[in-house]
Image (cartoon, rainbow, N blue to C red):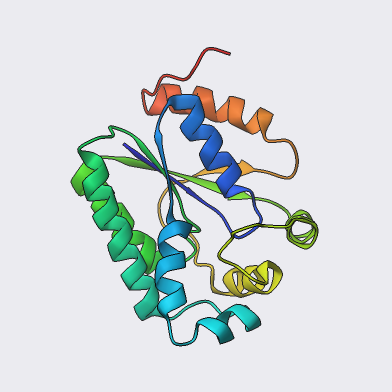
Length: 185
């Protein structure tokens, strides 16, 4: 099974995704690693980063094609994968869903959200070493404008503070719905 963990920049999706992967012993896949390779080759890289402009559809499609190729290779070694990706565009995430069904048979979507004030505080006060974004506040605002609602069920995690309670609730839900077995508390 694939568990997609999405959320806008600063919502805490990477934190939640890593916690889920650790809790259930799943392989963690960070789509930002793939984005970094493709975005830096984009001719508009400097402008997009400086002005917080989301990358072109052509560049994003290349990224998602590589993510799918990576998932195909992972299938041989991992029964369960947690994919950390913003999932803000419906057409692009649909590609991931189709690949997940073909490769793993099923998938779940965990959408991590936080209040705007919380996100802006996180992005303004946190040094994100090695992160793909130079100006995370501008990119967050750009992603927020282009976010497309989900047209399928998602598990929503409200991550406005300490994520321990949300992780505990996710643990129960994933154990009952997905049949995953978490570590003993």
